[in-house]
Image 1: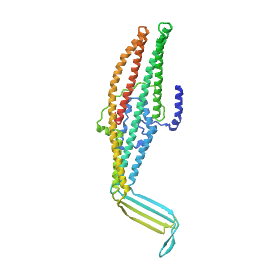
Image 2: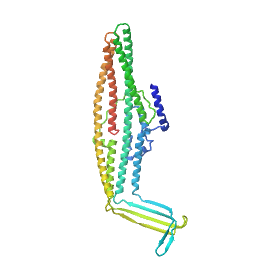
Image 3: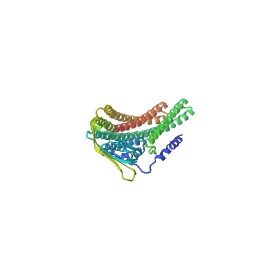
Image 4: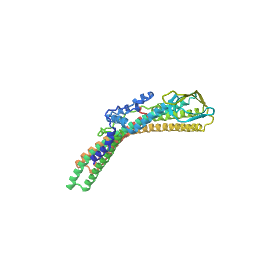
Amino acid sequence: MDKTVTVFSTCCLAGLLLAGCATSPVDPLGSDNKAWRQIPAWASARMQQRWWVQYGDADLNRDVAAAFANNPDLAVIAARFERADAQVAQARAAGLPSLNLGIGYREGRQQELDLGPYNLAPWQGGGQFSWELDLSGRLRAATRSAKAARDAAFWDLHAARLQMASRIAATRFNLYRFNAEMAFLEESTRASQETVSTLKSRADAGIIAGTDYHRQLAEHEKFKRLRVDVKRLRDIAVVQLRALTGGGAVSGTTRRDIPSPRNLSSLSLAQLLKANPTLLAAEARVRSTFQLEKSARLDLLPSFRLNASATGAGNSLTGRYKVWQHQVGPALDIPIYDPVRLARIKVRRAEGKAAAAQYRSAVLLVLEEVERAQVNWRSRRQQLQMAQREIASLGKTRADAAARFKAGITSQIEYLDAERRWLETKRAEAALQQLLVNDHINLIKALGGAS
């Protein structure tokens, strides 16, 4: 059954691997991605954070590098950053002069009162020059809004990479936990099998009742059932890793030791506001909407534009034009009453209020995430220490109960109880180790990758 599932998963992913395989290696920062090479200078230092390296897991490092290069969700967010960067250029272009040239063909006649009708020259051409002088600052405000929107898109990309790396780390350490639990269950299953064989021999010899043998046999089947269920969870973790990394092969699937994370330095509220990419993105959106509102208000002021145009017409495309007309001069647009512009101000003001409310909500959520991770971190460290002391005591009890049971001194019930308690505590220890490292990952994520 296991081989069938593996073959089926491999076949399902074969097309994806063939379509998106890459022969060149990728660096852990994913700098081979075009969008990521466009990191703004003000944020390049922040991108050197590689907090996952501290766990000393080469397989985790490869997973993160593969996800940064191949994960389609990250590619979507990177494309949004490219679009926001292009929109900055578009906003800047609104304040630059524009020059257009044109040529066309026409047929017709023109009649004047004194001279009578005459044929129009069929070929015509012309040029236009226009430049709006941003005296009010409306275009500059729009450009600042586009830059802030680009900053928000960049921090969204950074937050997505941080979220992706944390998901990969949590999934990989969950895989290690299931491997550890499988090892504990295999050990208990082997010990249980020896007990079943011993009880069967005693039952066949009439030394003990058959119910004792069947009780141990049921316990043995329970261990085997638990092992199958843990293996199912372990295989699901492998599938999740494969999906997160973009469909590539997953290595290091047999490891079962979970790393012990070190303590993190606490950040003040001011430092946290400058480190968390979710907060930085929300703050940038507030700046963007406020600048849009400012641009809309400035649009109510007069605008000044320099215009120039020239047109000519002739009987042939290559000959000299016989008719010329040109216009040069400034133009002043004074809005008196424009309901569209007035409505636009109200829309921008409402968007600004919504962005400010979202920023406050993001701050509260991040603070909650930090405090929750800190509380869980401290509590689970204490629980893990207690579980380790409990395991040390139960291990001695288990060994003594096994020896006494084999010697026929103690009952089967006492031995089964010692075995069950030891196994439950070992599984609890592995779960606590995995939860502890998850709390560590969540704290790093809430701190914006600061480790």
